Length: 211
Image (tube, rainbow, N blue to C red):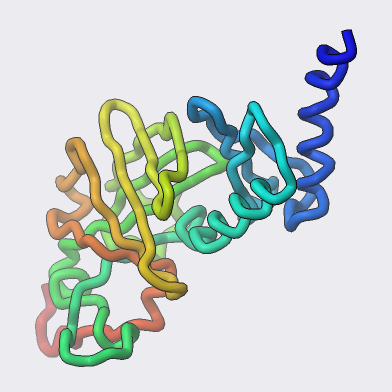
């Protein structure tokens, strides 16, 4: 009977701990992987994975630290980057928004909505519009978000698996995927590198090109 009592207390203990580690107000359950819950705060900017079987303060701190490095991946518009000048070391000058993205409007942007559990794909040239006002977009329902060592793996219906990983502390995410990624209307030039702060990077000049 004592063991059963401890099991009931465990979920409340977990929420108590998270109330002291950067989680504001209530915590909303986003989705389940096999052994972990992905949770996000109501302000949609704090999140992490909690083990369902064994909760330790040290392991929680490790999970939170891991997800903090991916914070700008969620609930931000992500723009695709290309290598503009491979000879420079400064990443803000090495990567940028290329001619295809800005002038041809042929590049895909992404938004990972943790509140509504949607993976949204749209054209970069619609980035200034509110998501609800973007007509040409593809929306995939997220079924799972999980961490796999140094990367985030997102699974959506019907059979799309997207992986994001980082190499440094910059807001740059490298993406790979398995499945059919949409191209019609949203842009066929799908980049391998994405950022939530495109304004910090180089931007190619369209010159007299009017589309």
